[in-house]
Image: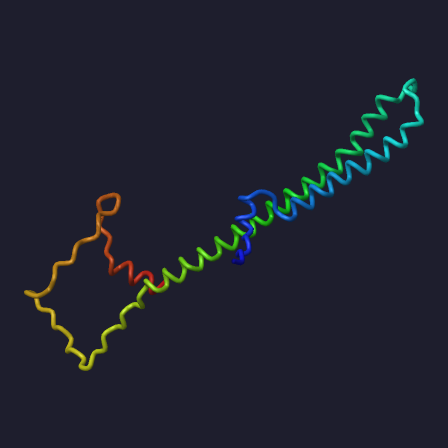
Length: 155
């Protein structure tokens, strides 16, 4: 029986990814190589020198700061990968919702086509609708809408 390849999400659930394994190897290799270098170079210096404490602080900084930077770069790469995956998922969801919305929308109905023109309706006193009067203007005077239309035309 052959096993199927493990996806990235399954690898993350199991433990470390390939990039994180490489980061561990680089960090451990850096600590070992620089540790050996400083151990060999400090073997000649005596403990009576006045700069022993400062020297040890610089050694610790030289050993562990690059290892920390390696891990920061690894975590940034992992975060970028997660953000990229989220972006692709979000784009797919937006595309799905957009296509669903366009399939639900129906085009507006076309206006009806008139084959015969109806004769104009003749308005008589009995069929005339009573038009509501506009509200009273301040001061108790009513505005005349016909006057306003005429005034706009001549302006």
